Amino acid sequence: MSRLGQTTTVRQALSDLAALVARVGVGGIFFANGWAKLEDGLKITGEKFLEQGAPAPGAWAPITMLAELIGGALLIAGLAVSVTGLILFAEALAVFLVAPPLNPISLNELILLGAASLLLAVVGAGRASVDHMVVIRRRESEAADEFAADKEADNVIASLREPDTPPKSDKPDKPDSRDKPTKSGKSEPAPETPATEDTAPHPRPRSGEQKSGEDPAPTPGDTLVAGQDNPLPPPRIRYADFAHWQRRRQAGAALDGQAGYWSTRLA
Image (cartoon, rainbow, N blue to C red; front, side, top):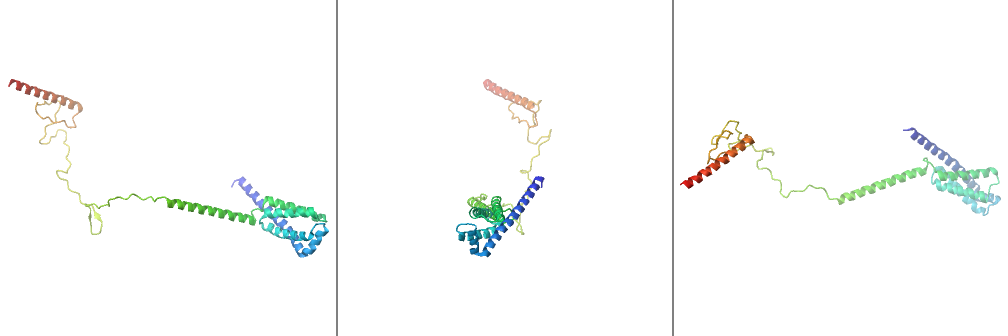
């Protein structure tokens, strides 16, 4: 953790500790004053307010007693501190304006309690409080609800989508007729057919070799005979030799045609 992060953590811890001490102190004083009014009773408390010159002392006694008892307990527990602090501040301000205490010490105590209540209402209860635990639970519940809603939406979207299934063939797959099943149930490939004269590959003749029944391949020095079906050159003859042979073949065909023409005329 960096130095800045450590400083922030220490400040947050000190702030929570100060808020806890202030809540316990202020709430304890309010609760003690309310408990004293409860022990004295509403009649004696009303007489005290009457001595201070408060109007309707019979109404002020129960209001202040309940506000101090309940408000002090809520401050100590750290529950609804913002609202409780404002209520206690309003109660102290009303007592200060309507029936100020005759004793200066009680007056100073009233001012301090009112100011501390207002400060707690603004600052908050801190992390060591019931309010903080309620906020954490509320956030966790909201996060769980959002997660459940997202999951439900994903399920709905997934149900609306068409399943990705591979296309089915119209014709069923037929087993290969060449594969013969064995006793174990597995099919073995058919044996290969031995090469015959028709299926065996014909070796290419080497240079200088000649197959039986074929005319020899022409060379640049060969003489083409007119009227004879001269074979095409094999692929091993160069293009220049093939062109020379082709021209000689065409010349022979021309001579053959002229010889036939003159033989017809002379006859």
